[in-house]
Length: 355
Length: 257
Image (cartoon, rainbow over all chains, first blue to last red; front, side):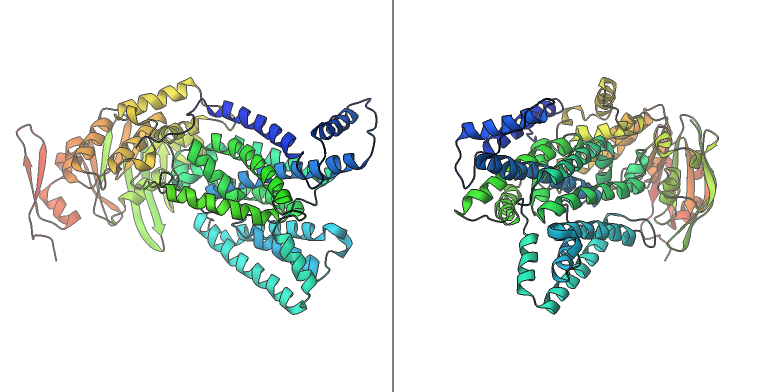
């Protein structure tokens, strides 16, 4: 069967350019959605004014409620959506390569339960009291990183790590972290705190601000560029370590480097946005289906598509329930799961199995 | 390029698989390694293509120890077609063959016209040029194995190692693959199950049993009824066909029990 794909070797670059354009356009459109209706002209006026103010010699922008809504609430969220969507999608593709398993997502190696444990500790034990309002984010991020490092250490016990050992270590540590989180929640019996943790774990972009956005977007973009530059090794990873050696790459060391970089990217996303499921699983598979498995195309296209996806997911979250905001993790699961099932049912895409 | 293994020993899972093996393949030679399942022939080849580290002895490429080469450098000299090639992800045939160019690339190098040309030529050599855009996973076993051979050819190495490449392939593909390999001007070491194929194609043979080389030489020197009895524990008759080629016939019911 001839596999029809959008573009062979030549078409992926124009596709990337088109997606960059689509991302900018999405941002411009998405910023006009919200609970308060503001005329489109006014929205762009505020943005232009702020951008002019960033230029050297620019005048300070005038304040006002419209400016606050657009510049301090809507746009930061959307920019955060770009960073988080990009980071999660790229890490999803990378994790799938690292563990050679199409079911992997950015959270697969214990990252989500580590983050959950960190957030629970922050909330329930007041461990993060001195960190102020972002305590759950900080400890969640720390938990994600620590568990990732723990999984790597565990998988390297008694010989070199491999995909299966990583998955097993990830599953084991996940269970331990989930057990501890539940234990604390049960022990303290604090309904308010438990609710807060659950809500945090459903993900939200509401906490966005320009200061942390700069860091998160920078980490996501630099991480994506790094993984893009590693596309040959990522391709070889899917063939297995033995085969990779015969093609000149000793992947053991690289796997640890990639895991660390991915954990960092996911950790930063967790810090501001909590846990947002399905993006990192869905986007790489959609891109593979359309463009093939070659990471030279998979990484950049996933990064851009993931960013666009999360921008629109956030818009939907804000408008779908009048007067209320749906947690974005709930929405990505509700939208993502049916799409995923549809992909499975189409049969043309074998998720790698091919048959 | 010349490959030499001297006194190679290997321990796998606590048992001694190779007990000191010497092997030599001269430039342009097609050397076959034969022996029953578990004799260590695959382990020996794995030591030569660096997937296993010998616990004793060493492998030499052109007089330099293999361990002194970087993985990239050795992959520019030795390419491998192994028996197991199942991928959990869906690459196109073109993607798979282009991976053969990886050892020639630094991190930020892009694939250039020459790489694509070599991949195209390799696919042509194995008769798979029309399949470049197909998904690797949808090919038959024989076609997949030819694509892997094309990848090894695109690797552009002076040496080629075939680790039982024709297992599970029907006879046409076995002959096809060996014909292609025989037509290459490369040093080839191949582990081969089928003694008739070994006799037809190889310049020299090494017979391995219980981790030791028990015979080596030209096929007609190695493939004798006595040796086949010692190594495989079956009775066989070795005849010449009308063109002087060796033909091995096995006697049913003669396996030592």
